[in-house]
Image 1 (cartoon, rainbow, N blue to C red):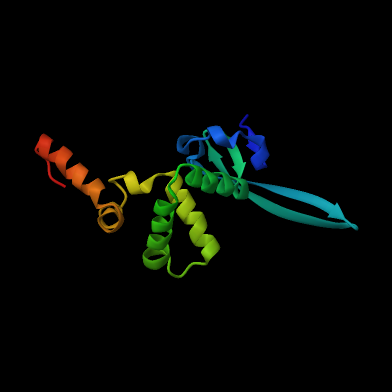
Image 2: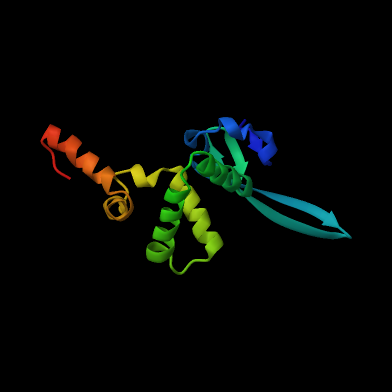
Length: 143
């Protein structure tokens, strides 16, 4: 059975890596409680990761803290701007943040299979494409 993580205090955040928090798939739990003779149901979304099933709000906090601890705040801001201005201009700030954190956990900016890989890196990280071109030039391939 997978470990359920419901608070930041349940993990040693100082030892977490991006691989630990990589988004595998969405999870969630439905709870029912009775109050005053009435039945109430509510749903708490979660994220399955290498370290277990983490409540989504806790996962978001752990991911953002890891980004800050890793000194990648500028890259996070660039991803946020990319999604907000170009891809998700119609979404709320909260929804954009969720998508950016999920994409960040998947390290999309480093994945040549990502449909925006070239455009994003041309705008924000041209050295990544230059390094890729140099590697491929040595193999006889082109970008």
